[in-house]
Image 1: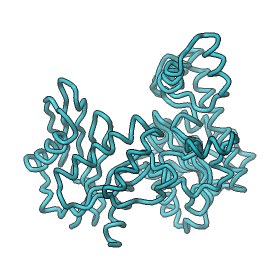
Image 2: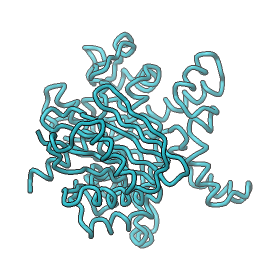
Image 3: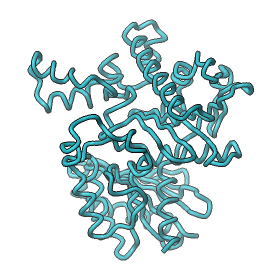
Image 4: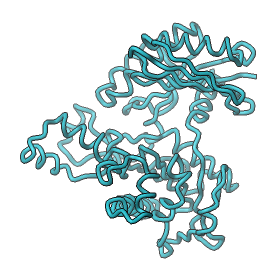
Amino acid sequence: MPSILVINSGSSSLKYQLIDMATEETLASGLIERIGEAEGHASHRVGGQRFDKDLAVRDHAQACRIMRNDFDTHGPSLDEHDLVAIGHRVVHGGARFFEPTPIDHVVKIQIEDLSDLAPLHNPGAVQGIDAAEKSFPGLPMVAVFDTAFHQTMPPEAYTYAIDAELAQRYRVRKYGFHGTSHRYVSRAAAEFLGRPLDELTQIVLHLGNGASACAIDGGRSVETSMGMTPLAGLVMGTRSGDIDASVLFHLARRAKLSIDDLDELLNKRSGLLGLSGFGDSRDVQSRAADGDERAQLTAAVVAHRLKFYIGAYQALLGGVDVISFTAGIGEHSAEVRAAAAGGLERLGIELDPARNAAVGSGISVISTDASPVTVLVVPTNEELEIARQTFEVIAAR
């Protein structure tokens, strides 16, 4: 049966999954981390077993060789499972890439050229692509972009109200992220409900350490909370989400913070961590339940922001059929779901507390039977979505 290898390469890590496209089953997965450091770590999972080793990993080329060796040593055999292509997750495709794209020399240059928009992500993706090309010569490679799903947003949604010439010169606009997750979840929700995707209006709430909301009309993204970078929108683990830009000017003048200081503040020392001292939502919820006032305020700020986006997107869509919670927090925190969707009965959203508390491992309905808006918990699978898109490109050749 044909299989797709999905690679998610960062500046110092390489994650992978081998997926059987006939069954859409994950055959093996792994993570090689601390690339370029004195001591790295490699983990390979297959058949319920995990194989770990500590070793120095000089670069991404060596990481790919380690991955291939783990497949050869621990299985499954890439030859027996007919590896037909590699799908690479690329965070930023700018306005150039709106669909999965076969990788050639020109595409790699364009991905690298977009590194000024994603300096922590795109260079690592290019390194992963280069390494994979050396380890799998002649095998087709496909880039799947986090931003691509949002290229259907209309100009009024992605345009910032700043000097138009300056914005065009420096590619300043909203791009959006988590596109593979939003695409996967919206389609999974339609299939679960047995309704045509193109007839549904949906809001997908991808809530993890990074979090974003997306308004989807007929399977097309029409608005999303993240912006030119993944900093905007919802409150996240260490990122602030939406903030008045003048706060930065104020802190630069009064607190004498540099541009780098402000960058670190908003991306690494804000969000849950900045408000409560804890970057993990589970710690925030636990402390809030124990009466910690900072944690309680943090939980309230998170819920307020979520309600704000739910209401705004319902207005933009002219009404919503389905709201789906997904990703680590969205799938596992009944408290966050209740705080976000509770009390919205006048918007047609009626949460069932018992269903919300009893969510299992698959897709679950957490709204009442009488709720005009269906509320779901939908486990995301970004790797499978990347594999599907990669396979579609290969099959169309």
